[in-house]
Structures are given as C-alpha cells and as structure tokens.
Image 1 (cartoon, rainbow, N blue to C red):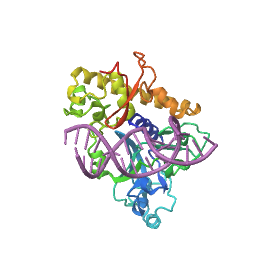
Image 2: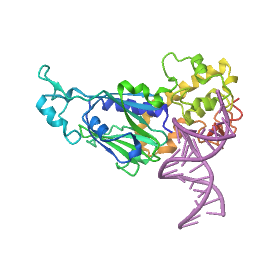
Image 3: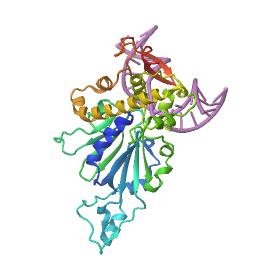
Length: 334
DNA sequence: CTAGGATCCTGTCAGC
DNA sequence: TGCTGACAGGATCCTA
C-alpha cells in the first residue's frame, strides 16, 4: 500500500530530523523484520550518525556514517569500543581536535534500507510531546497516532536526543536491512529496480522503453518494479484512469499518445499525492480519518467499485488484472 | 517472455 | 452473536 508518494513523504519528514542524530540503541522485536540482523550489526549500528535520508522507488535509504562524534581520544575510544551497544555516546559537540585523534574504526559507511511493503509504517516520536509536528507515514491505521510500541511494532531505534523511530508492520512483509554503502548496488532489490518516474528529464519515450514491447498488460508492467520504480496497485489504477487507458491493454498496443498521457498521469498522481500527504498529514490525524480519508483524498477509482465514475457517471468496476484487484471505468478507459 | 498460482502475514468483513 | 473463510496485496519464487 505505501508506494512511492508515501515513501517520499516519509523521506522528507525524516530528512528534516534525522541527519546529525546518533543511533543510541536498537531494539528488534521481530527478528524477521530486520534481515540479517545479528550482534555484529547491532554493534555496528549503535553510535553511527545519520547523514541523509534518500529514496529509490518504494525503498527508503537511511545513510549512516561514523560521525564526527565517533572521533575520540584514544583512551576513551578503547574503553567505549569494548562496550559498544551499551554505552551512551557523547553528543556531536564533543568531537575531535585534529592531531590528537584516533578515530573509532567502523568498517564502512552503511545504509539502512527500509521497505514498508504492504502495511509498514515509520513513526517518529519526539521526547518532548508538546512538539506537535506530526512525523510518520506508511500504511494508514491507528498505530500512526496511538501509544507506541504496540502489537504491530517490530523495530525501535533510540536516538541521542531521546526521540524514537518506530517501525510498525502488521503483516510483517516489510523489512529493515543494513548494507555497507559501497555494496549498496549489490542489494537484490535495488540492483534490478527500474527508472524513477519522477526523475528530471524522464520522457514518454523513456516510459515506453521501460515498460517494454512485450505482450504484458500495461497494468502488470506498471506494477513491475524492475520495469518502473515506485508504482503500486493504487497509483497504477489511478494513473490508468486519468490516462483513460484500459489496464488490460498490452503495452505493445500503446501509441505514443497513450504513453504521453500515461506519463503525464503518473506524474500528476504521484506529485499530487506527495503534496497532499505532506500538507494534510496533521489534519488527517486530527480527523482520525485514517484509511477512509486517505483513499477518499487521493483516489478516483481505487476501492470505488460500484460508485459513479467522476467523468461519465458509469459505475466503476473491479476486475482482476495481473493477479491484482483492478478498478477502472469500462466506458472511459479504452 | 508471460501468465498464473502459491507464499509470507494478520486484520477485516461478508455470509451463514 | 460468533464462527469460518475469503480477501487484501509487494515482492519472490515456482510451474506451465
């Protein structure tokens, strides 16, 4: 459910608060939610500093470094090193006179990959509750605003300012994964990921090339992350509706005009949703709207089977395409 | 190359 | 009212 726009909204939020923060602790409540997590990774993570938060498709990438604060006098660093994971590290200010330094060696800069899949959410909770800036995103349910941790909480990251980052995931399909930065391209998902539809200079010809010339349905092709990054079931349906293209059409039958309309629709849907997600997050919480509001705000056809098509009034139908529930208007989409 | 199915998982909802 | 079964879907893997 969380797709490119949700990931991007979270990315922007986290990129406001995470860079510069040190990871003080990590708690993995559900082992399967953190791929390959072990003691070594725990020791590596604790004390690292967030550099930036980026995104590729639906994947969030939290870039970590040793941090200036990890540069300490020799004596202290030796002491701390043997207790990594259980020590409170000094604040960023307590750093480094060049010359008298000996940095704590953390093997590599690392990247914390986060994929929300179906029901994942990231919730940033401040230690000072009166600071009301809402910071969360992902699958819309009550865990976004309720007491945390709750029964869907899988991972908790504690930061040096006492704020916490919660990873909640009802269905446990989402995951964290720690990789060395210089081996980022070896990640199985990222290595085969298609191009970004919102990249500067992405043209309809690029879209045509990405979706291929085969006989696959256009809906199936849009959902294939190896062809195009970031589109999931909701935005595939919404984009095809806006572009007035039947989701069952084979990509080989699409005309240049179809591709132009489709790309314009994809960009519209994604950017509208990113803007709305960013600006309405707090209203959305205050209203306790959750899923219903969420879909009402962004969807013309998704989840609206039986309701009137906004363009022609005919009932939206739900069919199965590429193994997915697919909502479309049989009159408008050809 | 593509379609289709099963898989992972748990909350929700229709139907009896 | 309470139970059961179907359904939801992102990505992967398998078979046809």
